[in-house]
Length: 167
Image (cartoon, rainbow, N blue to C red; front, side):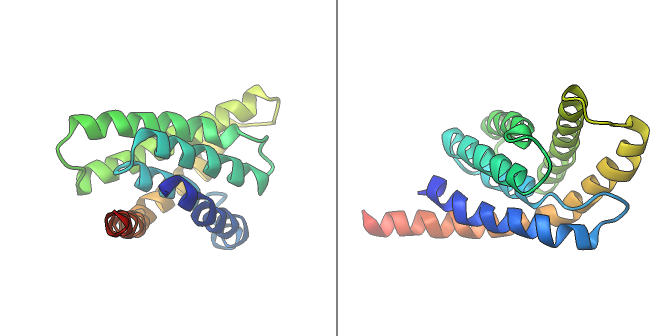
C-alpha cells in the first residue's frame, strides 16, 4: 500500500518543487522536496517500497525539469540502500542520525546529479555549481528534513493502523 501512496504524495512534492521552488531560491539552490520525502519514507519502510519511492520520485522530478529521465533516481536509489543498511545496524534513527542522513544524502544526491550532468555533456562549473547550487540546496534540505520526516511518519502510521484494522 505504501508503494501506491507514493504516486500522489510524490506528484504533489514534484509539482511544488517545480512551481514554488524557483520562487524561493537562495542563489540557485532550492529545497529538494522529493528527495527529502524519499529519504524520510525510507527510514521506516521496507527496502522494496523505498526503492519504489526513489524510482517514482526521481522520474517525476525529471519529468518536471530539464534533467534526462531517470537521472535523479540514480542518487536516490543509492541513498535508499544506504538508509536501509543503516537502519538495520542502528537501534533508532534520532535527531543526529536524521540530520546526518539529510546532510550526507543531500550532498551525495547533488553530486551524483552534477556528475551525471557533466557526463552527459551539459556545461558545468564545479566551483560555481557547488557554491551557488549544492550548498544552498543542502541548507534548505537541512531546514526542511524534520517537517517532512514528521509528515512521512504520520502517513506511515496511518497506513499501518489501517492495515491492522483490515485484518
